[in-house]
Image (cartoon, rainbow, N blue to C red):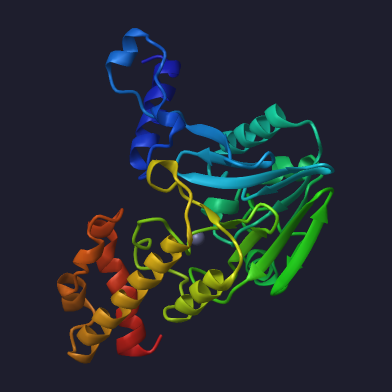
Length: 309
Ligand SMILES: [Zn+2]
């Protein structure tokens, strides 16, 4: 097998292993080569300008995505999404360079999980200043992963940065999918970027490691009270769509239903194993990963309601 073919097969396998929705770009007609007769995997990455803005972009690499904002004084980038794939970070920087040659001033981490924030060194080498919530900085400083750039700066509950003509607000809305998630809000553009704690039409990942049941609901209420129209999620929504406040309400409803149904099972002495088999939430059965991850989601709430942690 040629190394080129081996690489192509490895890339295809990698793409197939990731659950995500095709973006609008991915559905564009492919060049008519003989291979086009076979269904092609979507391109590994894409960059989309958010409609109605002239400065806000979504960079997607396979099943992860980041926001970047081009201001009059430089670029504000977010999550490097380069965990175990330095080629994603190279593509990210190349894509920014196709839009502007202005310096990349900031890289802001959404939260401390490696799949979103590892691999940022090429941004550091270009002189970017790294920012995260102060708790994320503490966590990452303790973990010392060799492929994670430790933030230069940790933000508190709310911090506003002005770069050129653009204002970005970093908000900590409490503990949810982690204890250090930031909601990045662009007040003028009425856009937020929030990762993993407001998935679009998806149940939560596995048994929700690092999560804070019930408190999570409070943070969603805080997001609902903020002033914005569109949400850029950290994983592409169905057909690449952005989120709205209705999505936040839907996630809140899911967590409330998951919590109350699992509490009933806990009160009946069914946690963990029986509850993980028996609790069903048919209202959400069309959501991504429902069959795979619902038992894990129940496991997390079983720990909470049956054991108090
Ligand atoms: Zn995460």
